[in-house]
Image (tube, rainbow, N blue to C red):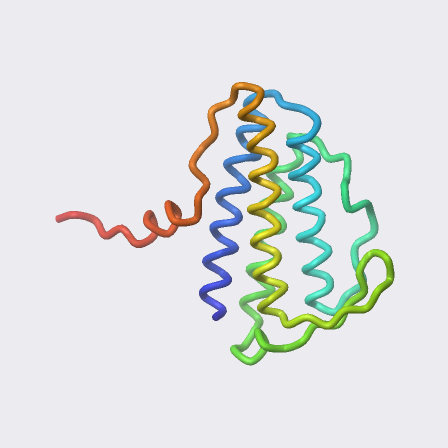
Amino acid sequence: MKSYFIRLLNYDHIASSKISHLILQSGQTGKPIQLMAHMLAAQQIWLKRCKGLPAPGGPLWPAWTASELGVIIDENHTEWISYLETLQPPDFDAVVTYQNLKGITYHDKLSDILAHLINHGTHHRAQAGVYLKLAGTELPVTDYIFYARDLNQTPSS
């Protein structure tokens, strides 16, 4: 299960980097940046929860700039992969107890949190993509299946 979630987080990193680069290249402001910043802040919050640490201070919708996104994407990815590397197979079934931003306590299985993390990223990248497309920007392919096909390609001899 560890290798599966590492693979998904690697996909998330590549897809987020593509959208971030496109935002920067296109000069877009506003919603696409806000959506990506929210997604990245949420990744940081979830990592702290999974580690049993207090959530980082700061807003869930930070006012980051387009130029900051790429660095944060890389940092989040590095921290998540480092965390996953410490886990053993039973850890993925462990229950994580945490409080949401309203102070309500929840108990969720780590594997469910990881699935949510990946889906949350896909959701907000798609939203940012809509804004970019409406502004006339051509979107890169960020579908997971294309990522998986690229990984599974064997060179022709």
